[in-house]
Image 1 (tube, rainbow, N blue to C red):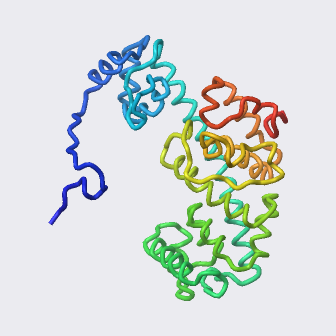
Image 2: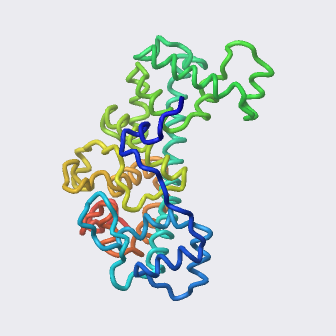
Length: 319
């Protein structure tokens, strides 16, 4: 027998009774709450193609503070315009492209370095040897997930392997690693027993310790997932704090900074820049990102954890 929905979440057993609104009704509601727009047809266009719910995260800072911290006021501050909300949204969309570019390069480099180090030392199918991993139960779960994921894969190299070879039942590590998400790859590396393998990755990324490497890969996973699902980076507080890197003490916000500042985007961008520079030192990623950040006002950058003097700090002062 099904239980009332409220019991599944352990909250107040209330019936959701909000009704959907047409685009015209959405415009009317926002105007009644104090939002202005110079062009109503443009207003309707973006609500229809981006969505009221998605955009609401970007107009939250423009709302009057509520006396109840657990609820939103839904009344806008004076001179709140839809153009400013849309500007934030467009900034964030472009920021995701910068972040995805960096994470893709980092992820591919880490995949390649781990697969190369493992295969050269332990063979093409080293990922199938439980003796090479610290937690054999975790290894069994991870291997089972890969097996299930690849069983019906239509990737050309997987189909080719299944047709041509019967043993071992999985492709070599350099092929399997191409199917791993960043979160899965992070877990495999953390479970790898041989620290010399990890040191090859660590040195390739110019990181000081294995622990820092593992923490960064773990910390980047939710950032990558937000980008992959077209989520909001601006003003987002992430669940994981990146580790302290002593040589970056002058670059990063301290872990114990007030208002959860270290969980915002700034520290992640600092570390991304370092890793991307280690992989591709001649690229223009940093310079192009700084130009993009310059389009924002100080308080909007503060909402991502940026210190007031960030442009005087490394690496952003190196043009």
